[in-house]
Image (tube, rainbow, N blue to C red; front, side, top):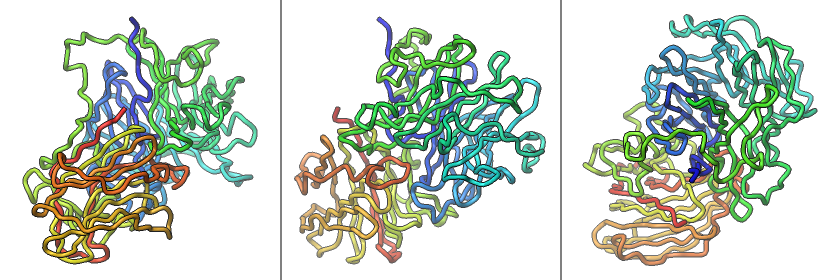
Length: 535
């Protein structure tokens, strides 16, 4: 029986995938925008199982995106390997521009960034030619001026790795524009990657924007500086002709790679709509590729992304060899001096001493400080969370919190961005009773108190929970996970989507604490948090 690879290979908020292969190992990175740590690094040995092994942006001072909104920050990384070194290029929107970091190990640590001065635009990539030359590839506004919004050009520029090794800007020479778009007046040619396969240089890129009109296109040339010709049947992959009600939409931003057996593949992003919205954001999908007349074609039966892919051409090692099979993410996370690799905070502290939470102040607990920042500000709120990865799911957390003032709050949050989220939060009533509030934020000026009630807890400990079924949310509380009581139900989960909130991210479930405008020097302790699929 032929084994099947399940799509998406990375479910939830994992957009803009880029991948490289080193011997029998595949390494993949995705965008994280204003979340920290940034740029997760995944490893696979068989394309079935993927394990996060690190984060490329993992320490204060490495980058700074203070003040960025959630959908700003880090855009569209590229990962490549050459002569013992891993290279990651990325764009820091609105702050620094394009940069490059390096490491001898795929999991890191990665270097501080070297800024690519003179590389304007977005979506940087690097290409190592077989003659020893190295090229930067990016996309920027048409040099003669944009005739319309999204009138961009893909360009290349040579790089000097010796300058990079000295910590200097490695770009040399002038920009050479190589491609605009496959369709006349198409918008946003982006995510460009160049490959040398046989006697041809190939350009794989996306155009049409990151929504329903997104598409993967291809061009080729005998000389890297051109002339380039587009594939006459472009795009090579899109779902835009299927409309917004199909099972997979927003397909684009791809990267091409081969496996050790000579088979070709492509990773790309797409979204799965649930009742017309995409709360999980853009996810990472995989399709096989075959070659005909020196052009790439999609090797699924339909020529589209499919939920299952025949993996007959992938050689998997024995199922008994557990070293080659990565365990899935744990359902229940505990906090043993380190934040789990798949957990995120919002932005990052400029200095370690400015951290909004601690994993060492109390053994086996995540301590959230009641600082002035809230889930609505653009600072560094006391928050940590993980991606929502399914249509139907449950999230709960064990929290100990003894508020000292009426301003303090702590609880769980279902977070799309600063202006679109739900908070189930504990606050002070008196020594015996707490106030529990469910707050819905559905726009910049629309914060609604759904329900407020006095509750009694044993001590200062509570378990707070949320369940999503068929795009309806229910919220619960109790002294432990075995005595949960319904607090509110039938809440609309659709607002946790880009269709409502805009932007480029998916939704997270997490925990938070706040002094709501004041640094009150209090804290809440989180002992565990559980996320599980209900599918």
